[in-house]
Amino acid sequence: MAIDKLRQKIGILGGGQLGKMLCQAGSKLGLDIHILEKDTSFPAAQVCSTFVCGDITNYDDVFTFGKEMDIITIEIENVNVEALEALEALGKKVYPQPAALKIIRDKAKQKMFYESGDMPTSNFEIFKNKIEIKNAVNSGTLSIPFVQKLRTDGYDGKGVHVVSEPSKLEGLLDGGSIVENMVDIAKEIAVIVARNPSGEVAVYPPVEMHFHPTANLVEYLFCPSDITSVQAKEAEKLAIEVASRLDVVGLLAVEMFVTKDSEILINEVAPRPHNSGHHTIEASVTSQYEMHLRAILDLPLGDTTLVRPAVMVNLLGEPEYAGPVIYKNIAECLKLPGVYPHLYGKKETKPFRKMGHVTIVGESLESAIEKAKFVQNTLKVIA
Image (cartoon, rainbow, N blue to C red; front, side, top):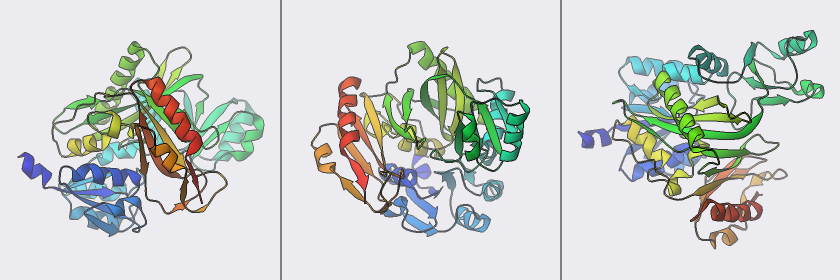
């Protein structure tokens, strides 16, 4: 039975770095993985069984691709959900399920889902456009400071605008949005949960995330996180609850705020491998990528134990550079033990583009952090 499961054709919508790392993990199990993406410049084209050129947001492209697969999964939420629903109706295994994906990809629906389930999240309001938001501020029904998030298509810091003072109103994004109260954040953490169709659940220890001050991207993260054991258990329990209520098969990354009053609030979720789990390749018994594949194949889930403390540093394009990529000073970083670069294979860099990541492990978190600071200050992505 397990051999039959391994022979299934897996189709991934999206050919970015997450798709690439899913293919790399799948190669250990001899899996037959196919990618749908616009063109072969995407990272996953380097490593997949078959690469199909097509638009993951186009109904016909997704449906035609999916009909040839046994299992369809994603590495990005911005896909054609209607085609996934049609494939599911044909009896194809689609993970995450379209019903969950429709909730997750719309931040307003996400927030309403948490609210309806009495799950802790920050207060929010829904607005049709930036004019409505300005009118609410002018009428006194909405107070500054707040955070605006576009309902759809936001990723990697895009689609988010922080209004910390009245002058920031001029930068409001236009489109359907949610506006959240500014949370008094002590820490930002993430917990990754895996679920398979048989009902087995596995959860990774929380990681702590630190964001770039201007790009609103994760700059680095570390695990174990600097929270109490009680907070860690609460965060893991909450993540499992969200995944179970959504009935997600595969991975669900749950980002959370720990407030200065020690309250844990759900920020948002992603139903796929996630930036907050990159370190698991070197630091955990089972990587998040192998775990996602095990889950969608309905194989036994792997061990989530953290083997050694780790820091993950995102390699972002330097602000002033755009053009053919150069990784400056990588040799100096490779001299350090426990330093593992992952370069995504993107040919062109531009400001704050994710070009790779480096996982740094050590006997202690302190030693890993010390090496990570060196990497962060030394390894630069330029043109």
